[in-house]
Amino acid sequence: MTRPQAGRKNTLTLQVGADNRPESVPASGDLKSRTEAAAAVAAANAARVDRDARFPEEAITAVRAQRLLGIMVPRELGGDGAGLSDVVDVCYGLGRACSSTAMIYAMHQIMVACVLRHRGNNAWHERLLRRLCAEQLLLASSTTEGKGGGNVRSSEAPIERSGSRISLERRATVISYGADADAIVTTARRAADAAASDQVLAVFLKEDYSLEPLVAWDTLGMRGTCSAGFTLRAGGDSDQILPEPYELIHVQTMTPVAHLTWASVWAGVAAGAVERAQFFIRNAARQASGQLPPGAAHYTRATSSLLTLRGVVAALLRRFEQASHDQAALASLDFQTMVNLTKVEASELAVSTVMSALRACGLSGYRNDGEFSVGRYLRDVLSSPIMINNDRILANAAAASLMSAVPGSLIG
Ligand SMILES: Cc1cc2nc3c(=O)[nH]c(=O)nc-3n(C[C@H](O)[C@H](O)[C@H](O)COP(=O)(O)OP(=O)(O)OC[C@H]3O[C@@H](n4cnc5c(N)ncnc54)[C@H](O)[C@@H]3O)c2cc1C
Image (cartoon, rainbow, N blue to C red; front, top):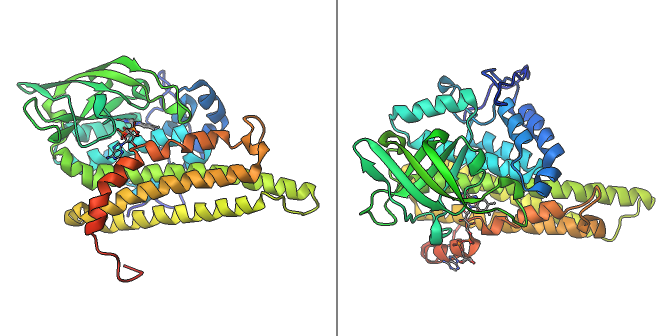
């Protein structure tokens, strides 16, 4: 796994262009300090973003200023050549500060990973990656469609072709930050006469599409992801379709990278809540001459489930890194089952961690105001079991789990 050069100083001087984008200033500095700088801006604006259900403009401007959007792109195309382990760490760091910013970052990186791995020799996608790094383009994703809801492996709307030109019109019922993205990466049926599961993945730049509002985004949590629904009308060149079938992209990249980055965001959100609970318990103990409050046991439980959650994510990351150059291993039933069940486990652990943090803080955590409030973390993390619904995953995994052998040894 390549990492950005260690020990470089963060010498970035932010130059902002007319459109609020950083101009081509190479951001040096190690990834940790760049993440911390962006996370500080995200944390300062998180409550307002949540209250107003608005796009985290300040945080994403800071993410761009730190040139974090293209970190996975190879150096020769303008990126840092960072690995997925770097990306998940950024997701975790941002998740502690602002769940919506972190989830936007995660969803963008999933799309980057798909383009990176499955672009073949396609010059259009190589130009896209160069532009992504130079201009810090933000990619959104559209998989949820019409009545099909969360079944990612089924598309209604087909790609229409006319010579080398393509067009698509789809009822995209959820597109996070669709209105604020620079490009949308969307699944579609390969052609009007193709089966619903015969899909492609295509990239459309902002100038290629229009969005007509379908449904607003007024939700319990993750309010800043602004995941409204639109009728997406797009047109472009056939080169904008990734050359590999979506079936492959789905198993090799989309699913594992989505579940790893999402789980890292949720772990970050859970860590943010645990931090609040720690602050509360320390404060309460100080005021009671060192006597721990009754909620202290819940704090211990929160740290314990956060530890387990981090371990679950790390184990999946390790498996993915081991398998990432082996197509058969990635497609294997065992690996796919592990990926999907890890998503279920991680989301449930994240929710229980935040619940324990809330109980540790008692009324102070339950309040929406005050420095110990855990409300926003709880509302945000409750999106995790439904972001690709756990019930759907468990139902789909049931047969596969029955066919897999129960492990005969503890390690390996
Ligand atoms: C914060 C957030 C951001 C999102 N951003 C995007 C985005 O940018 N782009 C995008 O395309 N989508 C996005 N989504 C949508 C997401 O990808 C899923 O489509 C969505 O979360 C699925 O929600 P659902 O539970 O209504 O749908 P479904 O999975 O369709 O489930 C509907 C209901 O049916 C049940 N169910 C479904 N299948 C089964 C089964 N086999 N067995 C038993 N019960 C079943 C479920 O329990 C649920 O009650 C986002 C979702 C969230 C929460």
